[in-house]
Length: 289
Ligand code: SAM
Image 1: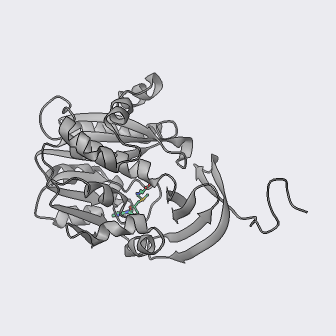
Image 2 (image 1 turned 180 degrees about the vertical axis):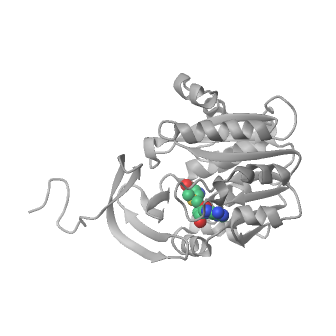
Image 3 (image 1 turned 135 degrees about the vertical axis):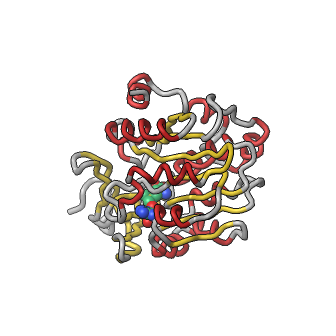
């Protein structure tokens, strides 16, 4: 007996992405492609009907073939465009190669360092997500497998942009949630440096966001929250906070470099960016409290 709309060979396997265990998204699985565990987290890859290949870390969906470009374009391009000439970029939690791929679209970038605590994430992405794994072949990119906090402490150089792509509630190592982490990020930024932090759902992570923007406001000269819609993300909205080390105003986004990106992005554009920073009233209240 098969349920309407499904055929007998369909699997009965579903994966879910819950927030606080109470509500979330569920996806029907065609095949389970990979399941293993690193010393830090469970790592799984599923082929799903609605979102293509899906990477799960520690039981949470972190990217899908269908909409990873939205997240990776939106976490990367606003920050790089907010800097006058980003030559050196660091991506904390960048082991899946997504933000790295987007960073390398900027011709002014000379080097991009992805720091991830888990080398198995990168191995898995190279095998099952070639559109992400290809970023590691670029001669300008390199990967450091280490705790992001410890790596920044030991690092004796500066960057123009730091992307903090490791928002991972209950993730493998909580060092990135500690008070001095953002101080460390600030300390590794050169003059005019820019950082971006992913802050999760502005509907479901209100307390986390309030704490994060308050803290960033004490460390950086300016902060700009923005959002994007990602179908596979809990509540379908993901927020970010852009922050800068100098000046008191928000940088103008550089028109000529925006134009250079136009053909290579599927979601990001000047208009998308303008809309992203214009928050709905309820979300504006979360970021300005
Ligand atoms: N790019 C993902 C996405 O599209 O949603 C978000 C990143 S994923 C949730 C978090 C990444 O940060 C994982 O690759 C994880 O291994 C890494 N990570 C977690 N804790 C870390 C730490 N303390 N230092 C460095 N990387 C860490």
